[in-house]
Image (cartoon, rainbow, N blue to C red; front, side, top):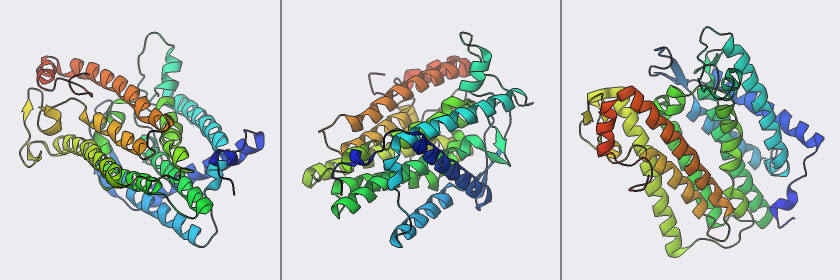
Length: 374
């Protein structure tokens, strides 16, 4: 067997792209049908667009556990392997990007002719480009399924499949899993599980409330998340050294701290938006300032500590690979750049929406993401 995972990767070819495109279509069709048919609890969203309030069915946890079970059973009986995800890696990126273009063009055409057309205004680019890149609608739906919410399923569970592919490769090649690989799998599984046990918190996020659904989010969900977020797996696949002793303890402790900050900050905001004064932030009623801006818990310390926690969580993933390669650290640094830009846009939106109340809030929560720096 090959002792270098990159030796398995096929160069891009027409046949490889067609193979990848077929399986990408199957993956999206399968996850969509499951999202449509699986049972799930219904949750009411928040006001979006033209004061719409939509209802969402949450099936993510069931789908996540179902796909895991199907994979492990098929692996146990030797009828399925994730190795093609590695073998046709570049072809899968190209095929998924092509599909993202197709889907976003369809969304643009349908959205521009819809009664829910909600154009994103940006004066220095043509409106057709804005409608393609940012999206022409906030919440397009297909057979009652909210597409913006649905796209998290093939995205996040696709990330899970890629990381499992690296673990499968390491076990099949070396007959064991290193502590680094086990740690990465545990961290990522916990990341997804904590996402899905309170999946409805997504209804209060920037993406669901403020963004339209166009190429930017379609490509981000379909390509950026599963392919870039799994990057650390390439570094761990052939890595024989293992984390142990104090290094292991420190990485685990760092991940727990970062993961708690990320989830708890998001859940605090969601609890307040959903329950108002009945919410409990660190066991106490929420404190607010004019305009209903939350200044309890993490939100009284910084304006986007949920972003801080997310960046640090992915830094903990990279730390599983040690410090011998910079490649795993591309993800947390790219995420820092992405979320800093998003935080800036959110700050601009909130200044317009809340006026002087936002200025008062910023005097208390003095930084956006990086304490005492930004």
